Structures are given as structure tokens and as C-alpha cells.
Amino acid sequence: MQLQLFFPFPSPSPPPLPQTPTLIITSTLFSSFFFFFLVVLVLFSSHQRRQPKGKILPPGSMGWPYIGETLKFYTQNPDSFFANRRRRYGDTFKTHILGCPCVMISSPEAARIVLVTKAHLFKPTYPPSKEKMIGPQALFFHQGAYHSRLKKLYAFDVAMISAFGHKRDSEMKGIKQLYQCLEKGYNSMPLDLPGTPFHKAMKARKQLNETLRRLIQERRGNEKAGGGGLLGNLLGAKNHKVDQLSDSQIADNVIGVIFAAHDTTASVLTWVLKYLHDNRDLLEAVTREQDGIQRKIIEENRRLTWDDTRHMPLTTRVIQETLRRASILSFTFREAVEDVEFEGYYIPKGWKVLPLFRTIHHCADFFPQPEKFDPSRFEVPLRPNTFIPFGNGVHSCPGSELAKLEMLVLLHHLTTSYSPSNFDCRWQVVGDEDGIQYGPFPVPKRGLPVKVTPLQK
Image 1 (cartoon, rainbow, N blue to C red):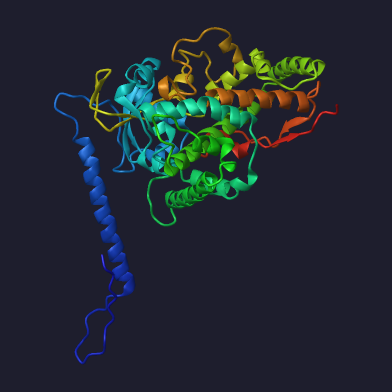
Image 2: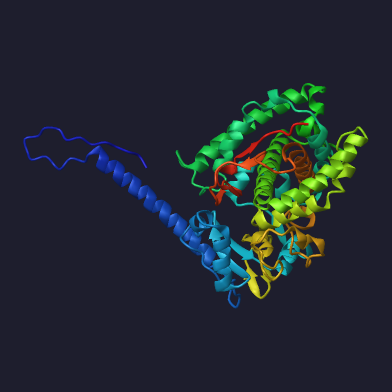
């Protein structure tokens, strides 16, 4: 709509009332907003009309047009959001978040159907806003040969290089800052307007993509520089059936790995420290287990090995219970590839389907006293499909084993280097503020600042 400014000129006859710039601008903005609202209302109504005769959608609320229940979902404790709707509607209910109609499921059996037994009916996906931020060529948006090929690459080579490779700080300059800006808009409303978190995130995403593409071109032109790290591994990923990965595929997967691995693992490690700090007897027991391994390492004059991490049963159970209790990933996204009949309900093609890991992990039917931190739960076999912190099926997290290895290694060094026998102020949480913050993953408030003092050897 063109904006014109009208000013009155002197006239012998009484002039008409002037149209001021403010009035015209206000009118233009109102007209634009009204038009936008009508478009959104039509799109929202079209979603509502997609229910064929005789078909029953899951119960639930779709909230406001376009906004849906996004604000409620991201401004309150997810446990409250899930629990309130589960009490009202049952284990399967519909909602609308981030511009997408969704069906949320909270039973282990239903989660297995979506992720494993009927996985061909539910493709991996994210809301369009999140997919734009990460990149459409990232591993977790794909199926078939491309997904299988990349997952094998991640599962072995990338894990080994990440665990034992070397760091290239010069190549990381600026990437961290851009990624942090991108992350701030991850859970924002997808409104690409100047000043909004989403707009800022997409601007950072564009700059991040340009930085990575420039780096990719430099590494392609220098074979020696292209051989190390995740980027070098992706640059060399080819076989006799498939050409090498394109610049776009590599850039999207690098950003995807940063997102999937960095904040999730860091959040879990933060909760591990929080739970051990709050359970001092457990911290002492973990320290005794790690001290035993450390004595053996010293006697044999060697470093920590992979085999050592296989002999940390208590520490492993602490990590498992942290993954259950904290449930960093509350859910995952899938999308119905066709109209689906699911547990007596109709799910239209294109709707998102969200298995609720957090709800399953916090259900008293599967984990008595679910709010209690109790690693002994994992001393006995669990009911199938009730513990799925990394997802399930062919699209489960390809870096799950690396993540657990990182946690075991950190806890070994932390307890053997910073926890004295009397546990007196050598490893101490600073401040007494309790609570949770989300950004986008749940972590203790203020990020759990900890003061550590090395042991005197």
C-alpha cells in the first residue's frame, strides 16, 4: 500500500480538514494489520474445516488464530501445560503451537507407534520457523539414503574426532556469537518483522550461513586443511553411489550438530551437578567409585580409557536419572505424511505429532515418586518405551553415545580433582536461588554458577 502525505494549501474558501501524516500512517498500519488478521483467520479456519465427515479429531484446544497456544506453551512450566491438558483430554490431545496444528501423545505405546512401528507414516520435521533457523538439509529433517549415510558418518567418525580431535579456534571466530543470537529466537513466534527475536535470529542465520560457506570454500581449496574436525569429515563424505555433499548440505548439518549437541549436553551436565550438589551422600558414593578408577590409572601409569567408562555403574545410573528427571528434550516433532487413523482419532496429513518424552518420564505409573532423584531406579529393567531421552527408532539421536561419554569423562575429572574427602567448600554452588529457566532448554536459574577449588595433590 502506497503512503501519501497531504497538506492543505491556502484557499479563499474554507479548506477541508487536513489529513495529517500521523492519521494516514495509523490508517495504513491498521489496514495492513486487519488484512493480515483476515488472512490468518482464513488459514486457521481452513485447518479447522479439514475434518472429514465421520472422522474425529483428538480433543483439545487450538487457541487463538495463528498464535494458537504458543504463548501459554513457552511462558509456563511445560509440566503444567502437559499435565493440565492430559487431565482434561487424555493421553492424546490436539493443540496449535508455532503456527502448526499439532497432536500431542503421552503414552509409551503411542510414542513407539509414531517413532518405530509406524514411522513411515510420520516423517521427522520441525515447525517451518525452526527448520529455517537450523537449515532444511540438516540430518534430522530427512529419511532414506541421505539420512542413513549421514547418520553412519555421525555415529562413528564424528564421535571419534569430536572426542579425540584437535580444536581450530581461528575457524570458530564469530560463529559462537552468531549462533547465540540465532538461539535466542529459537522458541519465538515466527514473525519476521524488524525488531522481533525471530527476525534477529534469521538475520544471524543468514550471516552464519555466509561464514560457513566461506569457510567451506577455503577448506575445499586446501586438502590439508580439510582433513580435520566435523567440517573436514563432512567435506570428505562421499562414496561410489553418491557425490560429495554440497556446500548447503554441509552448512546446514554443521549448524544442526551445534544445536543438537552443544546446548543439550551442556544442559544435562548442569543438571547432573545440581542433583549431585543437592544429594551429598550420592556425591560421596560417585566420588568413591571414581577414586577407585583413578587409583588404577595411576598404578598403571596411563590415562582414562574407553574401557574405564564401562566400569562406572553408579555414575552411569546418575546420568540416566538426570536424563529422566531433567528431560531436556520435552518432545520431538513428527509430521503425518498422509491422513492417519490413530488410536480411534483422525490426524490430517501435514499435522505435527509430538511424542511427549517429559510426560512419560514424569509419570508415576512408570517411575514411582517421579519428582524424586533416585538413580537406583535403573538397577532393574524398566518397562519398555518408558525411558527415551534420545528418542527411538532410526531417527533417534545419532550422538547419544558421545553425549553419555562426555558426561562420564567430566564427572570423573570433576570428582577426582575437585571433591575432597570431607567435601568442605571445594565444589560449591554460588547463591541459593532455586527454580528453572528456559532458553530454549531447561536449566537451573542463572545457569548454576559453581565455585571450584582444585585439590592439593
